[in-house]
Image (cartoon, rainbow, N blue to C red):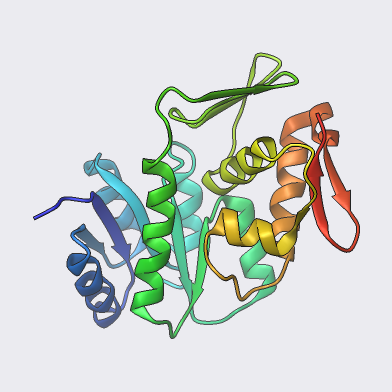
Length: 225
């Protein structure tokens, strides 16, 4: 059987964990389960081959946001958050902490596995020798490291993907729809504030170079070297 890596599934509902696990096993992933945030952290640090985490927001002992904050201190592993409600404040908080995807319950397991595939496809298909340089910005696609004028810039998984997309399409006006379809890699049913939140964070982290990302009012963004 093809081993596609290990996914950590975190949810206090055993039924939900089994539902997600069964579909992931069909896709040839190994699956580790945890029923709350504290157990998730223990499992994450005990298993070095975890390639992605699927985690519920509302859990006893330690919720999904607290758990993510702890994991983000040492890792940029992709994280998909499951939430029972679509609350803008919660979603924005999650993106601030480094959530890569949100899926609202109830959801189709096929959609979930499609999004898992999309994230992992982007990480595995990168050219191992591909380094992009532009106006003091250096992006190492294999190591997923960004430096600006020689200084490391700490980006989340999704921030890295978005900046890379801007740099690879420098000088091209990109609509929010096009950005969602290419960076999020599926037909996104949320709103464009997801992009705006990530762009704001990237600009802040880029310092003076953040001005290279221009807003095109009513359309989207363009990176000008």
